[in-house]
Image (cartoon, rainbow, N blue to C red; front, side, top):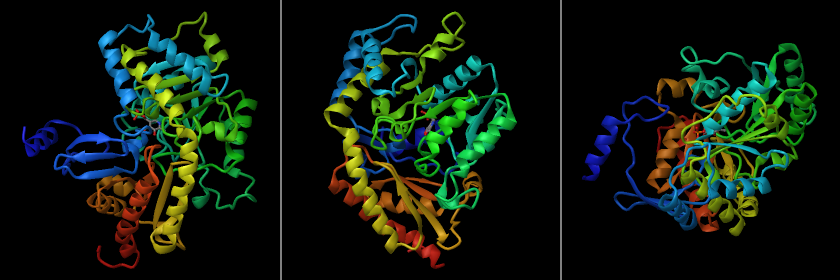
Length: 448
Ligand SMILES: Cc1ncc(COP(=O)(O)O)c(C=O)c1O
């Protein structure tokens, strides 16, 4: 098929996610390797966001690809009631790296499913129904996971697809503190508020948190926040679910983000980087007491593709690659360099409100006015399909051959953990040029 025909047939027959269907003109990508990918015309792009913050190992890692091929040749599928060598190998490796105590595993095929399982397990085990979540969060697309999602993707669908029982707690977001306080004199009010909320709500089964909020702004909590949330949830005998779909696998310079703050949740969910996104795999890891509760009780969950061998074998190879390439440490080191370079940009660009991040996980929040912190666009603009300034910045980056996620009014910068200094410099240089588009809006000038 000619390239234009390929684009046309996909446009005309496929849904594109989380947007209006009209006006979609997808880039036709034919190849990817390392931190780069190429379109059908041979144009090279630096992947400055690891697609959807997922290809942590870079694209087409040969050892992961070989593990997929080998598994496909020997045992492509098995019913989940049986087991395979890949399942045993992965379970053993996970026991070595997940926070200690979280050593009972349920394998699915996405972050959404990992959270759906976590929420079902939490409710079944506690016999309670409510879940505390936070407004700036995304936990998945299906009924239970979208119902605990705080951001606008819940609002657009909840009238039709809602699991009741979510209550939202304030965000730990110092740049726009929900209490208008300043750290540290605030006493971490966003955490102490949860104490009263759980007590007064009653019937709370669990609190779900992204330890570092991903899509909704790369919000890094203050050091006390997660330990305080752990103490509060434990005191109320409420389970703590850490949604590490995005924040794990070296992204923040730790295997799992909770390790940075010495916190062990009762349930941890992850996906994406577990295979470097080479195949779809989700993981729900629980504590022993949770698993024990189902020893003599019916476990009410499962999928045909649960513990699918082709999803598990590449995860074994991926973990070995994270270790061989020392990517956890690398993320910490190169992340410091990246953040330094991004912070330097804020001196040159009036449209930058805040640069924040941890490891190779960063955001640039754009504002129309640094003093008032007025954003260029809101979630309502995104729902309505109005043109977003951040999308114009992303478009200019793409013109320069650098792919990067733009979301409402911020950019998410999260390159593969194998990214080189030269590639970081190339990405930052593209940002430097592209941010002029937003700067012009600050000055009320037409887009350059
Ligand atoms: C924190 C978080 N949780 C859950 C999900 C849902 O994962 P998936 O898209 O694999 O279903 C995502 C996806 O980006 C995420 O970032």
